[in-house]
Image (cartoon, rainbow, N blue to C red):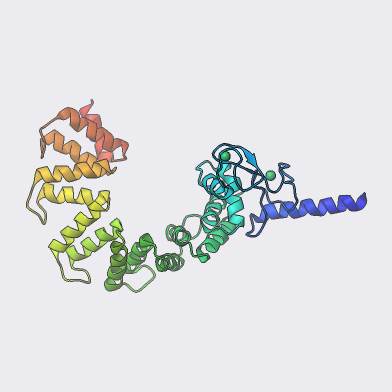
Length: 329
Ligand SMILES: [Zn+2]
Ligand SMILES: [Zn+2]
């Protein structure tokens, strides 16, 4: 009896220390409740080790295909892990992370980073991000780069940020290429180099990255590391707009509305502002309010003006809020 109790105690200690250290890749996780389990039945929920719950029809299964709807265990776990509700996703996230699935190592890391479902633990989060990145998953390096870059939960560390961005860029992330380019453009923790910045922006732009098309455009406009070329810059702004950049649409609106670098064309300017506003750009919403108020590129319409000022204010534009209040006094 004494021996049994001692064994049980040692076992419980093992379980609780496993929980404290977090999910360890290679560990077996209960697919129903997400707890680490080394026994044939989960100590937390009592489910047999083979048991899983179908994400689509909620049927409990033991074999690898759902007996009710035919969904595979693998597809069910992947869909469950992507559920935005952390508690629902948890068993699948922890299972897949324990199987060293890079996407879910990153996801599990964010749980530890924010203290969702598990206790907040930045070291554990960083270890999981690193494991995910080392498995060749670019988004993990990109995510870590942003943490070090912005000092989010860690001290600002530009050298580590650049190192992470570089690793993600090497794995083909266009967004990471933009970040590396911006480090060279600003000379953040590296020797400033417009030509290296251009190389990285070009690499990302070739993959259709809108931010990099914008950055390239501004280099050509100012003649940074290249010969000044307004025509090329304008083409790049249009390319960025086509790639879905609201900033590019907003800027084109400004250029046509004011006749900067282009022949003034208020109707064309209005069109670009409208496009940017539809993409969520608050400045363009404000500009549309002004255009309707003053009849720029469109018939004067004070009702429409008030509507766009209101939209801009709700999108966080401070001046729009003041103007809207004045109009509604
Ligand atoms: Zn369980
Ligand atoms: Zn099913």
